[in-house]
Length: 134
Image (cartoon, rainbow, N blue to C red; front, side, top):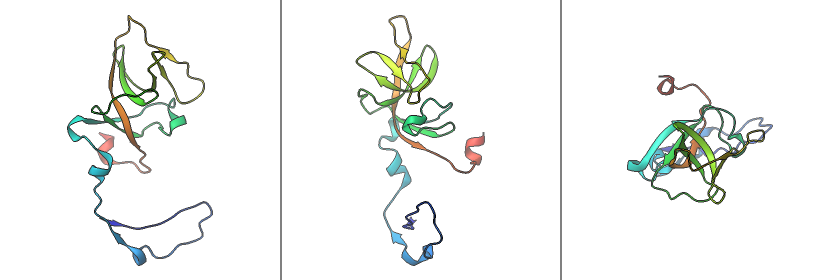
């Protein structure tokens, strides 16, 4: 894969020809984004509750089931039959949003709860993809 090293900042007025400094790197997006292929699934974020950690409505989530859950990880969980993406507070047994205005969700003894995996990456598409439209 050819990588064009472009450092962009606000107020760009122009930059060199992208062809001037191609770097040849042995880079695979599969290897970069997915560490445990057999334990990884991809989901799509819905809603605004995780914007505080950079996850926006429509973002692609790469979720790894192989990674051990740590306190305050961003996870995907099944909470009472609904898939949710939240920050897990292991010590207090609650799910937290990353944006103000969303109350914590307490995980009680009567709740059905399972961690489906840890969100290890998120991807934002700046143009619609026909693969995601289906």
